[in-house]
Length: 409
Image (cartoon, rainbow, N blue to C red; front, side, top):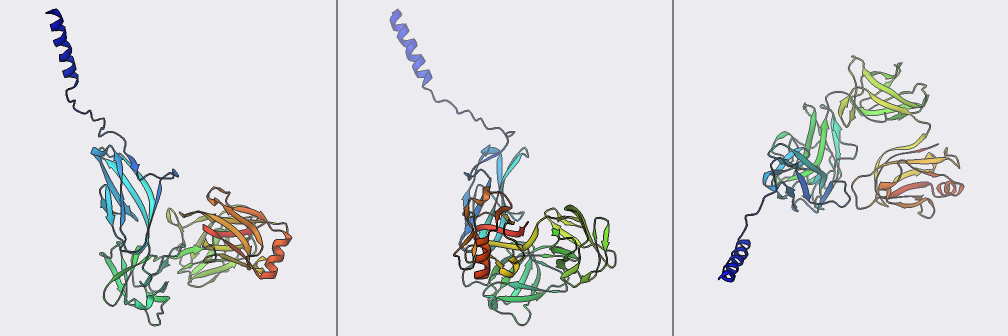
């Protein structure tokens, strides 16, 4: 009898241990949110989507925690376009800044940043925003470059991606070609506007964006200067500039046109200096920075001499910086050449400097430029100088880099 009772007790324990248990949820609304997917192995937290055409959707999903208490928002250029874990949307041709945001019920948030590039069809009218931006002033003509532009019947300026909040619908001026058209900008408040093309059937095509400025704005040429040399700063609405101030030195002899001012740079020591520009009525000329428009910036006197300055995203033979023999004639053998660059998102990043025949490398190909010093330097030797003089040019080529300046010392 005693053994029988022990046997029953053992069976009771076994069956009790096999009963189904309710899962214990470890998530809490107070947890900090995490985006677990998509996962970027580089660890940069940046995501790039390259869509073949405007009919190819941005198609991806996000895994987050705490999943029961988190909302996912998708933003393009700061505008909310979708809320949810799985996005499947199409967009007009263009380049957009992407932010994927995860926010909890308690207001805690995290984000992933990236970009979305939507390529146009080969037969679509298209015009991409230049890397330096597209800027204009009301009352002045603005020229847009691109392809298939003879198909454009109207140019639409909109505050939103899909051209639902239309600000202006403009007709191209006479003389438009397949690669270039002009519009006259009417009175428009300051701001960024999407450019959309409309064909004769009313179909809308993406064409980048444009920034409208009602004040005078300097756009380029002010980052550095050579003391005592001619200095040109380009921009918009500059025809009334009366003076330029570097630190406490005021230069009042200025040749001014709508798009540029030219003057003699003052004597100054190597280093940083404060720059400001005034119109004849006392109003300021503004400068474009990452923080917005400002009325004064830092400019630099460098011990280096500038050979070339601008913006060129290199892509081997299709896109390269050309330094002519005339531009290189004052660069002495043995001097150090400095190549300044930015590293945009790209499949890979490489730099090569060769002659115009691609037969002699002044700088053999360097891969992995995202991890190299900036500026990248090399010594200009006798063989390199001879190759430039013989072929007429040095070419700065490679892939995935935006070249911004080339100097020597």
